[in-house]
Image (tube, rainbow, N blue to C red):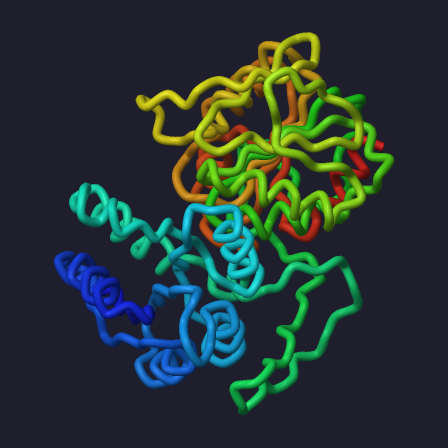
Length: 377
């Protein structure tokens, strides 16, 4: 099946180059281009693409505003291009909140220097997000609140009507095999966990916000977070989470000590391990590993250091990172939860956990935060 793509960027060079890269893939068709956010909305409505690539800084209307309107009027998976700066990270996180599914660094030098690598990565991203769960890619981050009745989107290009907030739990679409003992509802088993470890990738920034904002400041267990993200982004993401959450959140540094009510985010481009004293070790990223940070590495170190006292959660994301680390945790007696298919943006990493029969429970995204509180308090 051919994936139809709309390319949006005010740079003529970048539009042409992205279009050329995508068109070289026989299973991708560039159906149109746009030079600003207003054109992007019009083209999205007219062409109904499967995926939109979106720049942020454009004349007439910026990319984030365009994403909000598109999610209101014709929800479509959006891949944002962003600069590898602190400000670029902040803008990208705003775009993900607005409904974008994923992002790629906008680096003209890489396009010229490593055309094959750029082509492979861009085409892989387009294919993967074309299969994303659109209903959830457009859901805003919000604290639990009464259900909101959807209202018509604004017909102008001014401020769009806020998207409805989904607060009711959804049933799992991906139950484990009948012989696997997996809970999909009800309160989890309480235990004196010494660590909560959460791993995620595509869709993770929004998912982590929705989970962590449900935790009270008195949450008794230390937390480590492993999010696939570039080095320039994790500090800004940790700062954002810290402002939104009642618990404290910071980018992990070598020598940090785990403590209750603190979540440590693995720094991008590096690996995070936990030792038996509760100290964090930050190691250089290994070029032989696909992911920096890697969920498997952090989970594996937690299994060695904490035995059966870990509660690990695998959220939305492509691939299977976390499965082997979860296997080690499971062998040591720790608990493994997976996000259900219906609430995932990309049902890859959680599916790997469920298919390997490692999940003790499968919960919707809106249930995970409250169940963490029930399990640990």
